[in-house]
Length: 434
Ligand code: PEP
Ligand code: MN
Image (tube, rainbow, N blue to C red; front, side):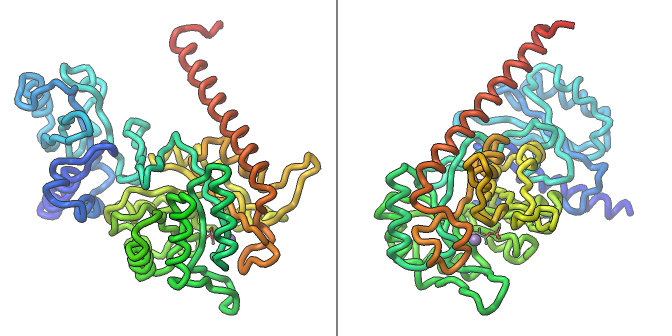
């Protein structure tokens, strides 16, 4: 028993030492080990019991790891003999952050006392749940990334638009040309389609990739969200991009039907070249979907966007799915990932309310006004000819109206956020009247 505990403890200890907690930083250790094994040790956390909560003490920038403040900290911590300590330097973009990792039964260690000690910037408790992507009490930095010059984080908003499935070069070109006209550089486009019926169009597969990528380059499209069904599709996309001279980028999409395909999750997670758009399982709880994202992250790739796309329930009728966009703030609270909404697959029709707005517009607004960071929406120049999901696609005629509506919702969200900040400040400064 004692032996088991020791091994487990050591593995957990090693694991946390290989984790950078600042998402915009690169650990010197990680650099040394190489990118491929950046999060390798994180998988070892699974042997830890709930009581082995990890604590990270982040020191102020000017604190010498060999100086008196660190000695005082280590002296203080020596009264908790079961808690092991390890100093680590994490190289950020502008400074080296010195951190002290505490492993063991840290629930006895008083966080507020340590926070008041000289040289301490902040203290973070890392719970065992969602170790890679979790927010851990709101104290960890968000997970954000820049890909092909486009920012993805919990503040940004990007609209990815395009057909459900790639069909003809003419349609793809019309789509890209119109996107360029309205200044949108992020597209969605399926080459590999998981269809409910084996007799339905399954996508053109790798044969369409060369001309799709070439056209994307021609119209300044920077990123295309593209679903992959198998690990080999990642290779095909990588090869086609390389052959085309990398004119654009791809965000690998894990569709709702593969939301718990753990081998696929590992495949998209174990490469670092492409970011991943993970779509919530249509019948999965938030917890199950977040564990799936954790699979991706624990394999080494934390450039993940999580997408709400509606959940399967007859209670959503007449919509295709029950719109679940109230989970946007929930996901932002539980994780540090950018959150996407997919109004098209949630609603699944072009029905219009008496106020003149399509339900898809309303669903989009709900997602954005709740703080969504990305929208995935289907457009097609000739929906009646689309080989997949035509009836729910918006048209080129609806594009300008859609983008103007997006802008209104985004503005409203930013105003709500600013109002909330003012309200909190007022509370803190005693502005509230009893
Ligand atoms: C899609 O976005 O093309 C798609 C098939 O979505 P989902 O996996 O959410 O059904
Ligand atoms: Mn579709």
